[in-house]
Length: 514
Image (spheres, rainbow, N blue to C red):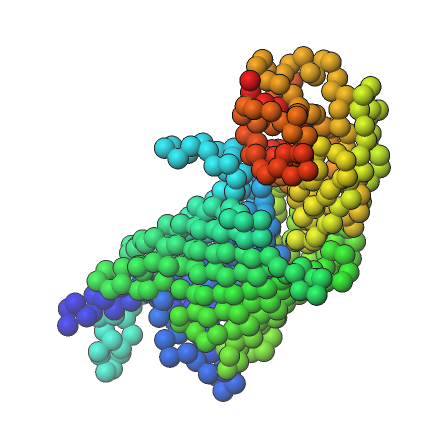
């Protein structure tokens, strides 16, 4: 009996926070009259770390949390770590604040950085992908009453006296990585360190999130499908009992709307401690910088806190480096939730103009030839920052036969742009490394939008110009040349194919080591 009383007063108190949060999210008993309209899941409120169920990022929350299939948002560290792969070429830092009901509050901090800019111990630098860090903090006011429970068996006065007040907090630190396994497939993983504390009791655990995103086209419309498993872990132990984590499986789908900048998202979710739910979210831009959002989540057997508890709405405004977002969510008689987030971007940024499709801005040097590249852009993701396109372009008769890259634009992508071949200025050519035999050079100063990540280049050179030796692609980085290896392909019609991947630069030189 002594052990049972200890678990009730200590472990039960520790589990009380999780159960209270789970009730706030799922239990109909907290909303009078709602139980008649919504069935309660048999094991509802049985998991720990219920704060992990609360979404982060006002944009995602305003869209009903239908975000597991939406790539390119910095809050992907929470929703689907595979989405981090779309942030290559830029850094992001931001803060999310949740003014929850009944005095509860939540803060979330995040930071993303291209993996190529970080050197890890033992592992070194990754050539591609994006790292993400997140800190999720949930807290309660210090107004919960502490009672011993010693008088609960007293038939006359079963209420124990108040012995003071206390608060509680939950904390989760996430470290994730998202990368492209293929051009149309991204994978991601995030490791969480979780800690819960209530009064003088606490518990910790580890958890893992896994995710993937797949791009495909149907009927000429680009789609992104996502799948994620969140909170894989052993659970949190309080005193003598272990409570499982809120494991959840999500599958999502997103596509652009016919209007430029619009987004439609759908998600199916199945948590271990509740019935399945379906969510739909929409984002519609009013201007190039202002967007409205709304969403709805419906649980099987009805929403516990009433029909309106599944509704959400919000708005966002985006500038070149900063975006601000707001979301509103009602929770029936419990109150309303107001959520705010701010995101600051570094590195590659969208252009303020709509589309830059003019001829090359700098005059061609002597000996240079301008080639017209015809492109086939495909929209990937859409937000108030602009439209992110995957662009594949080719030019007839040019040694640089084709290029592929991802770019961010405010509007439609151009169907063509120009690039120059030959005519490398003398001052630039003088810095080429010794022992290199140049076979061709190109200038790409007219690529549309803000290029994100590396550019994939396919070359076609006459067999006489290819010759023996290792093929390398040099690109101009400030006043210096840097190089990457060029892969040799097949031969056809007296020409040899080469391919290489390099960051955006003004000048490129394909050469061979003698």
